[in-house]
Amino acid sequence: MSLDWLKHAFAIEPASAFEPTEVQRELVDRVCRQIIVRELTTPAMLFLETVRPLNYVTGQTLQFFTPLLSAVGGATAAEQFATFLEHRGSIDYLCRRVEELSREEPAAPPKEPEEKR
Image (cartoon, rainbow, N blue to C red; front, side):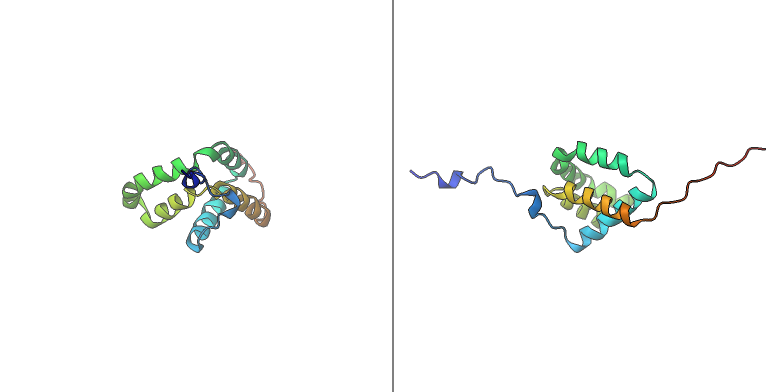
């Protein structure tokens, strides 16, 4: 009896094989730009590296909450982001985009504290 059917039973896609759709790219870029504007690049990178093993679970959680998110905002955006997170290389792609966009964005001038009178 041959066990060839079992050879790939637990195979997972390599992280490098992931390529997001155009809609997902735009959504990820929007999220990454908001991270950069709010000057949260370092905490975001730390968070993403920490939750890397849970990206599929996070995607499934977003799928579960899509009806609730559709009442608040865009259901398609939440669904696309959830689908994006379900892929193994999504966190790597997200980290790369944050790094690339943070290099492109000009550094915001530091805010001067207002003087109290």
